[in-house]
Length: 385
Image 1: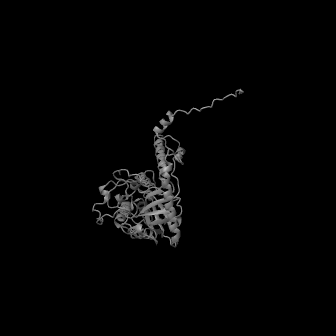
Image 2 (image 1 turned 45 degrees about the vertical axis):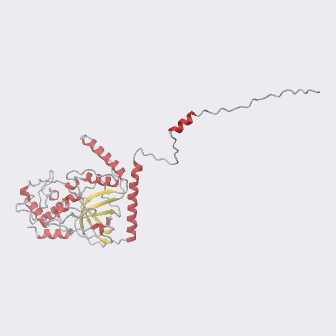
Image 3 (image 1 turned 30 degrees about the vertical axis):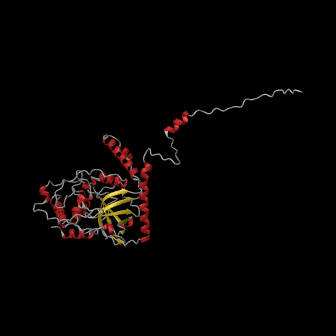
């Protein structure tokens, strides 16, 4: 049974969406039985549970209908609930054309392929890996069940295309929503970091699919296990809603750790440092051992609620901003055709001459200029009668 102090800490620091009690109990038992954390060590338990929660897929660790409102795309002129934990399931750069992003991706893959076989290369040469251009980001955020679109109302420097992993956790604080789009800025977003290995394994697939959609190209055949949000129960708002599913059944009497090999502790980590412990699969389902790095110190924030006031947004300004965003997207898309190599553009009238006309012109004889014969003056003889 979960310690009451631990349960209270979870409810206070992560109120929305609500943590699944089944997942929390299994995680608690795993930490106590497998990692040998004291059952009354509240500090170590809360630290480890937070690490496990931020590495999880929210579909496994959270309850349905306790985070985002249903049908987020229909929201307008409202604020999202405070201290709302979401995960990044898609990230796209909309300030640059999809064609230029595809070129960067191709160069990035070629660079990685070259570095993979050169293990004795100097570490400083890795910095030559091309980076995606940075303009304005469009995100898809999920509570594990619903997805809402979001854009940068003000730049969030921590997030970058190609570097921010899928499953990255953020906390929204009274974020305003206009026409189904959440308006993000540093004042109303807290970065919690981490990632989910299963989601991030398909980061390139998600990016490629988004770029092809922007370019109007047909979607490539989805590989088995592709990182589609619906595969994890996360419903996109532009797709029909499936039939309601039955509630998840309680876990069998046998604990998960007895049906699957227990995760091993990360190598090289201090024995007493539970913040970098191995990932608990949870969710009432056995899963493979997952080992993820700990959150960098500069991005890890204490999970303490704040009493920030709501941020006032002017509706007219937001509508103008959204129109500008749409214009940027259209301009970026229109650059696709002009950015293709070899696509030369000419202006002016073009006169087409058929082959028959050219032959006729070649066979016409050149007119000969006729010259008048020059007559010399002659003497005139007059005859008299």
